[in-house]
Image (cartoon, rainbow, N blue to C red; front, side, top):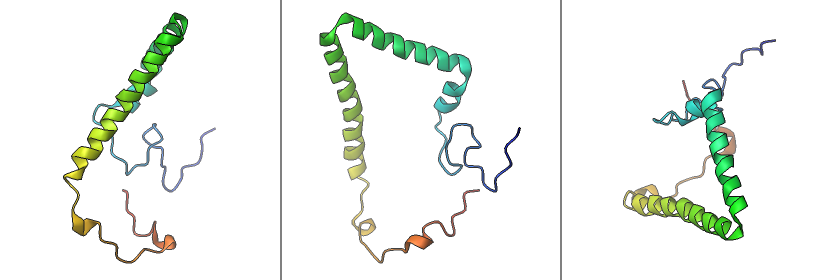
Length: 109
C-alpha cells in the first residue's frame, strides 16, 4: 500500500535529508543506500572491528586513541580556519525573533 503524498515530503531524496539541505558532492548517502555497496561497507567495518577485538585490548586502546584524534583534529581545524571569517558586525545582537515566527516565510522549493 502506498503512503499518501504529503504536502511537503521531507525525505524525497531517499536519505532522510530535508530538501533544503545541501547534497554532498561525493554522493555518500546514495552510494551507501544501495544494497551491495552498503553490505560491503558494513562487512568491512564490522570485520575490522572484529579483528581489533580479537587481537586484544592493547590494540583496541590504540585504535580508540587514533579514532579520537582523527575526529578531533578536523574539528579544531574547522574552528581555526573559520575564525578568519568572523566579522564583529555579524555578532551584534538585535532583537530576538518570536518562536512562532521561526518557520514563517521559509521557502525551500
